[in-house]
Length: 381
Image 1 (tube, rainbow, N blue to C red):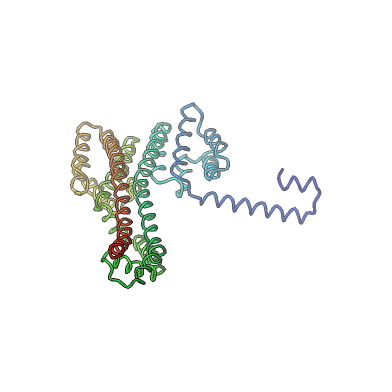
Image 2: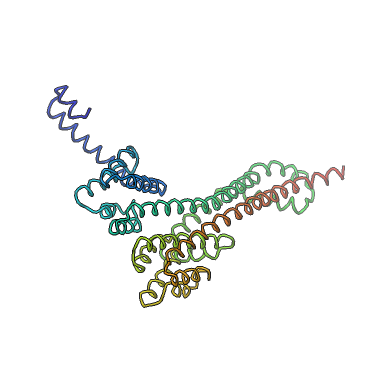
């Protein structure tokens, strides 16, 4: 029962009814804005896209299909937005135009592909391609994040354990050696000095690390810092090739799907720039677009950037000759999808034992430094 119906049934005073109406409208407005500005995840958009494609494939018209989605997503962050999209389409707007009113949720790539699907009458097929692309992108991004997050978590735990040992456990043990007033082995002396330094300056070390992390984060958010950081990522040992393969897979799949959807080459290159997350590669893609606009073919333009492996522009050149450049781009994407997964598994299998061995070596050194003076005392006694 709504507030208005309740007021009529209970015969509450008019002033109270007006106040309740105002509160209800304000609460609804706040809830609506909160839903709109709560950014939906890639998985949510992928599920929405696939469900809409399924409804259209079943023969349901667009507006009823959108209504079905709104009903399906009640309570989710996308429900209000899809309701607005449905109302806009029902009022005469194109589907792409209605999606374009929500740029925080639907990217330029998404909107342009939907527009191409509407124009060519292949909206269902385009939505299925979009869902597949978003799914693969989320899957690959998850693989790369797991490769980085798991070793990083192990490293943080290892450093935390060592800091705890040196700050709280080692000093109480080594105090006994200092009271004996004997010359200690160099590992023990080094351990005592390191432990004393860390215990004295522990808060300073933690503060310095926090300041460094926030400082680097602020610097990376600047234009110059982001370019330098993105260039450095591609040159990192072990991880550099993984980042490059991930970007090539994402870029190739996006371009292939855009071209297969009937979007012109120059427009597809411009849209694809919004998909690439590495600003250094965005600059290379801008160079490719400029060269193509001046008459170069895509393969030669890609080769002249010097950033892409030879196999990439050779496959593109073959696709140009056969008239199936989008098929060549999708083949490149599939190839690098597999390479990203293999590289991710290899890095995980290498980094995990390496971090465990490093931690074992540090703990072993601590144990050795503590046991050496004990052995010497026993020999003397």
